[in-house]
Length: 382
Image (cartoon, rainbow, N blue to C red; front, side, top):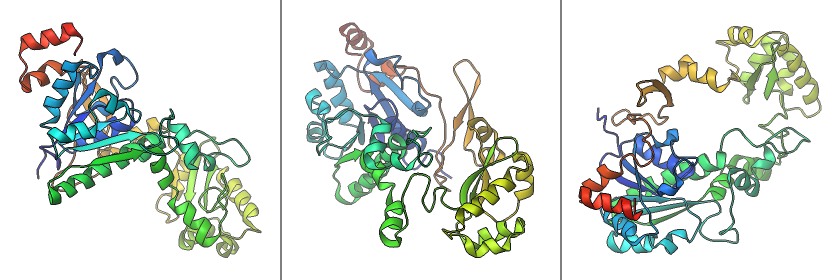
């Protein structure tokens, strides 16, 4: 087993900040790529400075608005495999560090831009955040209670799934293409595009089956008792996901209601059935339901809090929760690596570095002396 990771030997220069880009480069770093995060020291202390997504990375400061800063960047870019950025469209061109400029000195570079609405189109220059991208893509309209305003989800779907994950996929595809052609390429990732792509099943259900697509009132969102959430006696919740009739049959038989088996998706009886199941689940606490439903083949799950999930045996055994010592020797919990490879597994190896912690070390590696580094610091280059 090679514990260095499948991407060992690749170098990533990450110019992005906040969440989408750093989440993408974290995926690459978890699987062995060397990721050097580059930020302007003016942004020290802002959100993203010591995010857990900086794990397994090095962090340096560099002022790309200075001539010397760009010179240092190009020195590094010449030896890099991947560049990742998350500025508004046009910013890297104004800075002089865009794909066209970098590819002239390194034709094999894979250059990925993550933006809210993409590098083209009428929204190209609009500012936005996760909630805006979900709104424009038609996703937010499907989240929340029926006949209530849309609810902002507690996780950043557009940032993470729409942007970060698609960027990682795009980079890996481009790496494979480079193996065939010997050339790098440019990747344009729009978080809004990525969010809209999550509507594939919803669109299929609407177009080809004719099912309604409404907030908390669709095939896989509260319309039927078989795919719903239910309150328990202690005001906790559990989920039922008995889409296939064989699972629904098991639940109906458990509740001694065989007459409901054939009425799983009956629109006349659906409210009656939902109310019946609601009343049943309210009779016992979540802990009791966990014991009673354990082993029953019905597709169910307790609705856990973050703290409960972090302590669950499932995720400890699956190494989705790992402990590392911080700089003070205190154990800190991190989320693990979800992609499990048998021969080249990813891993969480190092804690997030402090802002600019690796600047001197990295610059020395790229040929700059202590005297030069001190000079750069005085000039505001680093």
